[in-house]
Length: 169
Image (cartoon, rainbow, N blue to C red; front, side, top):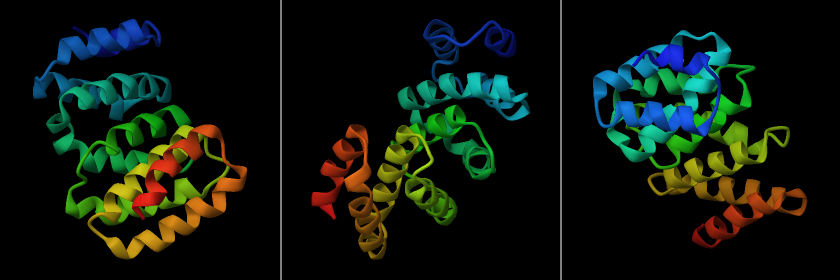
């Protein structure tokens, strides 16, 4: 399968699932997807981010060699919301390697606090920060303060995730 050619066809669940089925657990095929994801242009990167997220949800070890690439992409200014959302969706289910924890915390705290970010990005960021707070309990008070200060103006999705995390803090 030519992954880039598939992504040029459009952006649909059917196409994304087809790419994920093609990749399966194969690291070489996942590498092909990640090369397309990294190379761009933005439209193709955005389209590649969805099957990337779906493939990693099914087979988490596939992401291990690409942490640097996805975290660098997440930290870029002006990155489109769909790409951020799919990267964060993946990170919320991953154990972030120790060498990337600082950068991930910095980016996800910033995204969580930014009320201009879409709700899904803020919610996934909240979960990533919470997951890391299990290893670094000293960040729990800051996380709790951010969540509580956001609650009066928050959406139902934000409040739902916060109601699961706050009691654990």
